[in-house]
Image (cartoon, rainbow over all chains, first blue to last red; front, side, top):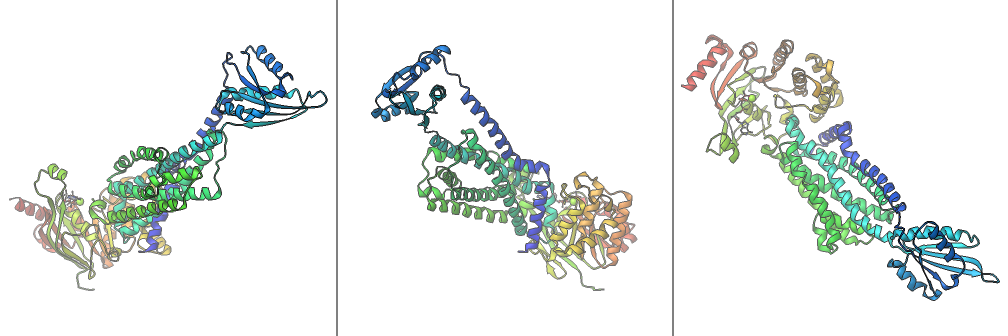
Length: 379
Length: 257
Ligand SMILES: Nc1ncnc2c1ncn2[C@@H]1O[C@H](COP(=O)(O)OP(=O)(O)OP(=O)(O)O)[C@@H](O)[C@H]1O
Ligand SMILES: [Mg+2]
């Protein structure tokens, strides 16, 4: 193996892709578009959420503690709803001891807001503090919450402690652990799809491969140089696109930050990396067997659908048993899901990455074999 | 001058396996297409050897085997005492090969292409630049050295291909229809350069359909019909028999009869 020649091929390939606007946009635009799209979508969703008009005939269900009875809050609320021509709210009272039970009703959305007021002073009429419980997964609850905050504002002398009992962050987490792998995986595949057919089958189709094979470079050296360049390019574009997705996805889920530790991100990156190498080597092999870019693309294109579907499988079927770690690709989707859901086993993870690398090795071996075949390469 | 042959082709044969589809397309039952059969010849230093034959005779296939791009199904080729196979890279660094099927990457400039190919031959940058200067001047590539190859005309591309094929200062030069697409000026430059290479003691094989080119350049000619050698002689003898054109047609008529 002459590494100078390998390196020459590597450099040529990098130059080919990094100086071509068309290739550059194929490599990096998906991430940018997803990022921009999600930002806009996130804003739209936010606007939708805050501007949801609640049906004026809807009767809000409020629970106030017994201490807070006849202290003016009911009147303020009744006045507000009459003024805005909305249905009267249903106000109920509960003893302080039953706060937990009442909050259960808030959680299952049969109540909209729970208020707990504490008073002090001679006549026990000065508001000391107010606790407001609401549930952001119900639009009415959020609406009423803001109305009550305004109503309480007139008391001025207390501090309000607000508690959101909606389990949105867990919900978002689970949606994220489902959406994120799917988008990441399909973006990785799209990078590979715009690289390999062009770089391998394209050279064959245009006859530039023959010129190279006439020089002293061996088919194996040529394949190595190509694979190195394609992997690096795929890593750069794949990580860029994956990063865009990771940064942007929380935007449409309502501005939550992902609960990933540094180690979590590192594991995520490693799984992505092993998957990328698997994709590159498989796509290179298929491109080497195809006669033209078109043919290679037509073999690889339908893969997107297969990949999207396979990326969802781990969220439907439990793939966390160790044997699943030995199924390439599926294991990685399972890993990604476990990582984003913050529940992963290092053994499973290690086996998954290893399995991907073993398959990558097999594909590289077959690719080198294909490159040595006169029938496949010279035609 | 060394009188050992630089190149020996002995009993070369090439069979292309045919797929079912190809069998149908070619209306044949045979599983193989015999493109070249039992072809032997020798080539000495300072000699220009012309390969002639109608379309599909097997010229390109023969030249591809000589260049090490494909391996013969039968027989063997020895260059400078070393066997040419697809696997040996050392012997390929002594060969310069040019055919219209070899394309250069449209995306790059002639300048970069030359550098890249030079690196594949293991040349250092200084050698590459010297060769570039010399060959680009000679074939008039200088004017468009920094224009993308995709934007060049057929003849301009051919000039670049010529320059690139000689990058490694090869001992054996194999040109498949070298003046294809070239204007008179460039053809003349190629002819002159081939004569200069001959003087430098290189061995040259050209395949062409142009009789005048053969008469001007060649020392020996070989006519190949249906993959097999039909005629081989020195140009001096061909001259005596009334020229290459006459010989070619009489050989062709004889074969048909
Ligand atoms: N890869 C291949 N697979 C199958 N058949 C082939 C292949 N390459 C060439 N042939 C066949 O071998 C025969 C010889 O082809 P070749 O290209 O050597 O002819 P040629 O003498 O160069 O013709 P031309 O003057 O048209 O260039 C033809 O019948 C061709 O169809
Ligand atoms: Mg030909």
